[in-house]
Image (cartoon, rainbow, N blue to C red; front, side, top):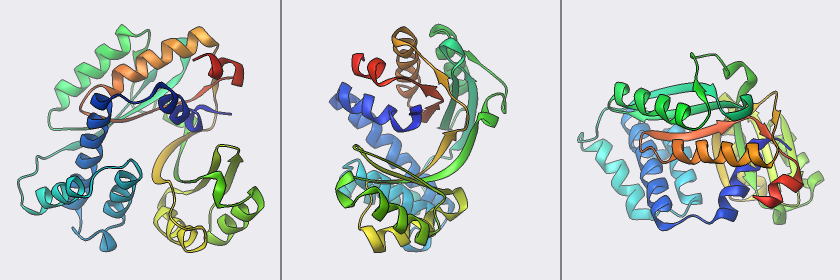
Length: 246
């Protein structure tokens, strides 16, 4: 199975320390503030904000942190952030997409470039690896909501494109522009999802051995440690044996 659905499992197994958790909270809050500033501060009238709030809740971000992030945008005291995407190659030629929100493009570009080079990768031009991914909406449910056939039927009726079911749960994909409608329809049928977000889904993958995975994890961890970086996506593929050894 490709990397996008296994990365979360690695992170989960590693166990997030409190520092990593607070960093995650601040990144999710930043996304909420930017979404609220760009559109209506009411999540029901602003699909991007609704999805940002939903993702924050799925990661157990406290309600007061979410409300504070929205108020910051409404109050006009939020910083101006630019959304930037960086593309490059990690160890063994793995494609890496880095999504950032920054109030200083030069600082972020310099940090991202340096992190790539220090960890056996190199930053490329925009578009250098993007063609290996499709922009998709992703909705995840635990295995307990139903068997693969039940979820597949619900997904088809909701207008989704594809479902990956395993013992870990169900991952439902749809066109990026349909995510709001599809996730609403799925929730009416299956209940609250675990996660609803836009992702970069690899169309081609690069298989890694244990050493390659360890090097890649080091790069991704270093990138995610940057406060300006919102999320990192790679197109690694690894066997269950390799995953079990991480």
